[in-house]
Length: 210
Image 1 (cartoon, rainbow, N blue to C red):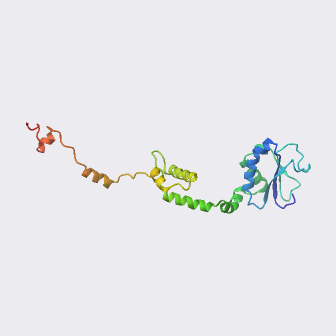
Image 2 (image 1 turned 90 degrees about the vertical axis):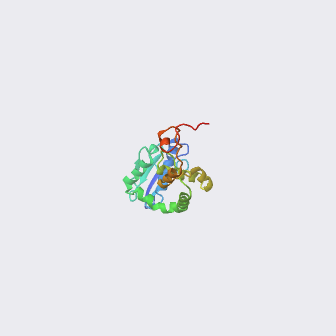
């Protein structure tokens, strides 16, 4: 509380079911605000720490308080924090501190990319998109085909290209030139004996006598 930043803190305990239910959302908030120097997200374990009754007079947990810088003696309590969504947590922070959560996430994105090697992953994905044929099926759009490619890549980035070609390579549609050439070179059926067409072209109407 001696810091010069805003402090958003929640009192919790391992045996508290509501505390454990909200834990993932609180951790998500902490990750989203990690690059924001004006705000600290914290958790205090009631089993290991005794909180001052002056600031935490309530007898229930989870109990969240926002200590605004320059107003640390007047913390703001967030009601119903145990059931609050991530969006409700961020809205509470923005309302009382003026910090834009989207801007905070943007600040932390370069470090996140470096830690998770996002550039390397994108390069591998580009190579896969260039070398692997997209699976095409009736009734599926190009976007769905691209999603299928991404799904296959995430399942097995080192899948054999030969196997991928055997499975995914679409047959090219016949061109107009190919269709014309095929029709020109395909022999016409023989006229039926006795037909007018056969007679006009010198074919006998009746089979020759044996």
